[in-house]
Length: 422
Image (cartoon, rainbow, N blue to C red; front, side, top):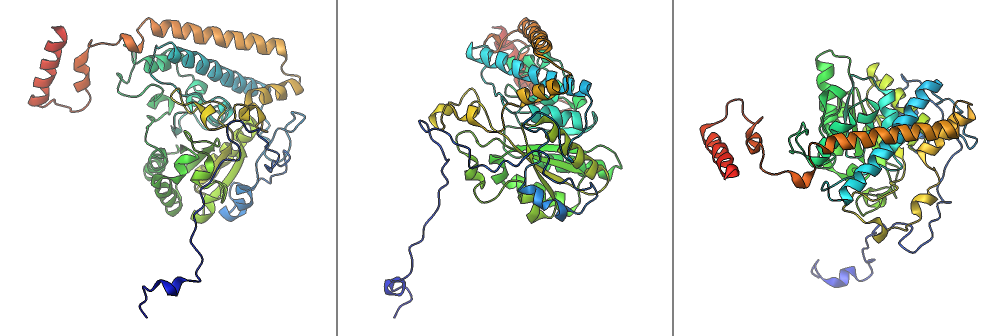
């Protein structure tokens, strides 16, 4: 009988595939009661010199510091002073106001594109506070809080969004893809997961040179399914690279939920186990937990104990970008139902519980931040908005490519300039 005879497979089961589906679709009532959200303070904190295996229970746990009473509890409490907490709160509020103004500017036709980080402000702001000013971040497009927390001028951020005469990148990057070496902010890439191998390579170079600076790479949950993620993890593990690797699990890629990237099978932090490096899963809406985890991972990297993969468990409160309508694939009320709350309100409540803050001071601070954002927008728009950009300074497109411009490009440049003047 031929081995291709179908009778040989008569009793064999039919093969099937599993296609992950989100728990809730438009029209459903979100119910996150099935999520395992442990009490704050219950996750153990290993010593920074502990072997990676000691961290593996933390890849399925959830590091939380702020309890239901808004008090900081447990071994991960970073015991930050009130001034530092107020600075972080102000930076988070500024990020949200900045986002709202730039989102509105896009809807008014002043720029082509914008991406908000609503609900994720604590992650970038607290990470910036936990790392040294000289350390390098390799961010994605939702870490604008890194720049704001490091004092990057709001006007310059807006000029980049408008691609106007004040844009240091000369219109060569998409809006919101900032870059500034002095502020430790590597140029954002629209390609997914490239930030991880870049961060690992930069940290390797830092170690080779005998430098003391470390790097932090950022990706979203969807990008963990990219090859670059795994290449970076391999290099980080093999060479014990002094790098912190952050996977921001905000539950959604542009229109597919985290299960498409493997979240149904394991947490993203658990991917550290397969590579033999340290891993931690953190409440991304708890600014103190974010700070503590990044500080711990940074100390581990600086002490020669290698890389750490941190999963920040959070929720993308709004659309992926101004090009996305999340009402087409998830319930409109899902963000409000998210059990980990609003990171700004949680940090505010913590300061109030300490007796270091109140509603009046918060309102005054928010009003001041709003005035600063509005003033920055006014200044940046004096230099133009995106639709107003024409052929002025068209020859600049030939700059910064060759040290000495080849004759053929020089001819093209001169021709472009002449045509722009006609």
